[in-house]
Image 1 (tube, rainbow, N blue to C red):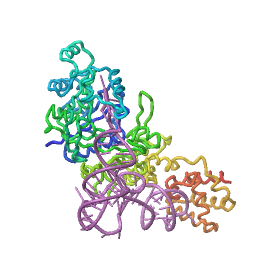
Image 2 (image 1 turned 135 degrees about the vertical axis):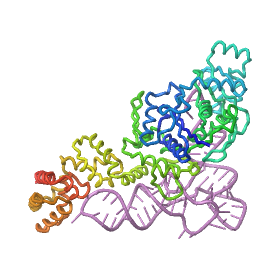
Image 3 (image 1 turned 135 degrees about the horizontal axis):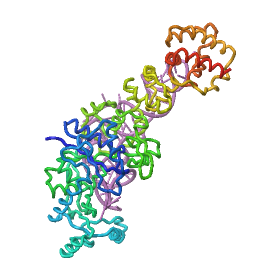
Image 4 (image 1 turned 180 degrees about the vertical axis):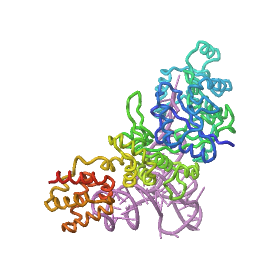
Length: 507
RNA sequence: GGCCCGUUCGUCUAAGGGCUAGGACACCACCCUUUCACGGUGGUGAUACGAGUUCGAAUCUCGUACGGGCUACCA
């Protein structure tokens, strides 16, 4: 059987592409690819009041960045188009009416105020949040409590109404989850969910079942927060299409922040990204930082996401996308939630930067430097620089701090580290170094170091006393790779110029 | 409140009845390095609690506690 695996998203700020959603996509993708199936992305835009312009494109951009593009979606198209819910609106009413006809659903005419009143009136200490269920529905305004004439009259008058599922009083609904095994839930605990809203749009509950059937979905992945309403979906499948056709479900564990389900707020509060890419909410102008802009490699992002709740049973932690596809198994996904650890996330990125070739980093570091105002970047120089500093970079943005001095002479010097011990002897020493380097015809780190050391001997100075000042002349502070490597790369002219400048500053 | 899901070092996790509960991140120490890192070696550190089943339980069962989720004309 062909595997058709799908994931659904709402283009809204709350349902946007945070870590949890991204991981759902990833597992979905890995599972589909592993079994030679199709990865289908569905967009939920049923609730126009929450719809955020640009959010859908944003989701696709994120997927593009990490290379998890779907086979079918609202932008990629596919044989079951359209893939956007608002464009499928007309489909859903038919199924909702069918359910009413078969006695599995009913019309409800209650206004928001009446619902509010019900929640207030039936609220007790024992039941702080009363539900629209088999007890309450007889007391509300719907086609079960009203006579059929009254119902007809209201429908003919075009009274605002919704269609609700009629949950059985006591029925145990069971299904097998790919991660958790057998799960059973008593229907009496689930309320009569709205299936079709007053504006004619379906709720998630109806849409997910109708779409999965129409699009011949075989596997459906979603977050654990959907578990309590799973019986609604199972029952709808039973009533509408039969359970044999129902996709296999996998309810993924939640990704937790420091306090509970990871939220956008957690990122701002604790200083780490929770979205794949930068996202500016057009309604509030609020910026949510992304992993991409923070300096993560897409390979690292996928890797750390995959390992948050899954492992292959070995001690391997660094996986390429291809290895993940090969080794992923949904049965090995944890059932418990995982707390996101930003320190470990950074470690994954560091590993990936070290693992990446100079060539693959070149263009990304180049544009980063330009962004930071370093305009004259020679590509062959940059290649050498990247090779020299990449082991010291945890985030891509670290490349700036680790390498700007190759392209720009220091303008400030950590003079406190030099001046107190500065003296005439050192002044003379560096004057000698300048003379030596000026006559140098073999500008390599090894030769430069040899010349430098010889002069320390001649001047009876310990290398340790002049190495630090030399470093500060070249880069401005106590950081960076080996000084002679730096000197080799910046070249003869620049090295001598920086020594002379340093001598003037320290004198 | 009700229901659902979960619980192994601080964090992510391995161990599917059987050697001193293994690894990674973080942390600490030492080594390397005449800067800062990288790297190397080592260390601190966990089966939530209580019963039961068993020759033997992190592992199976029950209870308790704790954590999370759901309880909308949101998804």
